Amino acid sequence: MGYLNNSNRTLDAILTKKGREILSSGGDFNVTKFALGDDEIDYSLWDTTHTKGTDFYGAVIDNLPALEPFNDPSEIMKYKLVSRTDGVQAMAKLIENPGTQTSLNNLKWYADDVSGDGGTRVRVGNTAYYLGLGTTFGVGHVNNSDLTIDYVGGDDSIFEEGYRSEMFTLTVLDTTVAVLAPLYKALPNKEYPVISLGGGGNKKKKKFGSAGPSGGMQDADRDKWFPFVKSVQHLSQTIKGCLVADGGTFTHRRGNNFAPTLNGAIALYPKKISSASSPAKTSIIVAGESSGAVVEFNVTITHRATGIRPADDATSAS
Image (tube, rainbow, N blue to C red; front, side):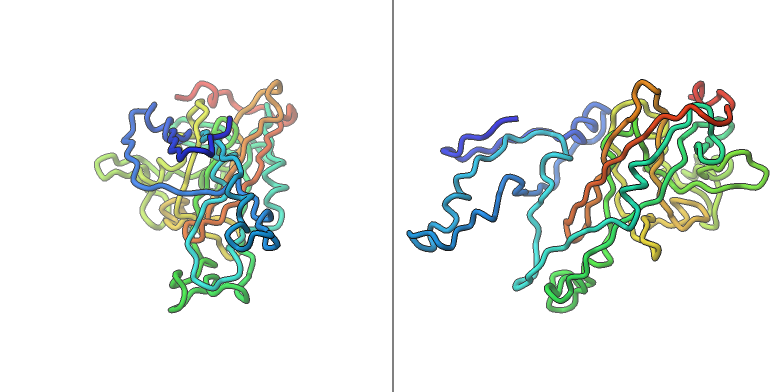
């Protein structure tokens, strides 16, 4: 990481981690949008007492060094420039649903326990993959409706329905540590709680089972999370179209199509780690899809070697 030369106008473009992942996997990489950010700017340096007048209020800010681009989304473009209705006096701000950061920092992988507080089994046909027991989490908006009409929206706002009910994009930066997936559930006569994929597959209809009142989990819904359960690569995972339920935790707008019988509830699950790599850490970034507001949570997975030993099929599944 370095600084750009402020004496010249410079356009320096690089691929983000997500862009590199798409290219390396042979995916369709087509840049259609861009964003602007002001991470380096310290607005407290705006000097209304400058002796040379208004043209020089921002003189110090204009000469701040600009960082060269780098590809870590947890360190750059955290403060994107966004549109707001004229005259507003506050920006959108996200806050954690009570207990979210504590829960995300206390996830565990039990080396010999996938029951009780140890983990969740994810089934595909007759094959089982194991994850640690997941946790739900969520965010909320600071109610600043007295300072901005954009919170509730309306005819005079650029947000017709306001950003208080917006959807969110969730990004886990390293899926070797944790993965987003539908919330688990306990089933009768099953030793482990499970993440439902539905019943028998039907590839002709692009279905992956038939669980849930909506008729099953489609490939598009399954592909939001299941490939990351299996993958051992250091990939990021992004799920768009997430909503905040009445209880303050995330669900997916696809509802039972995403999480059969659970109204789309989303959880973050720890993946298998060794004692040597404990604690394993990553981050999850939550971004408002209308407001552009961003909040980042730390995620910590701790290895624990106590409990009941499960079958070993998880390590040999393919």
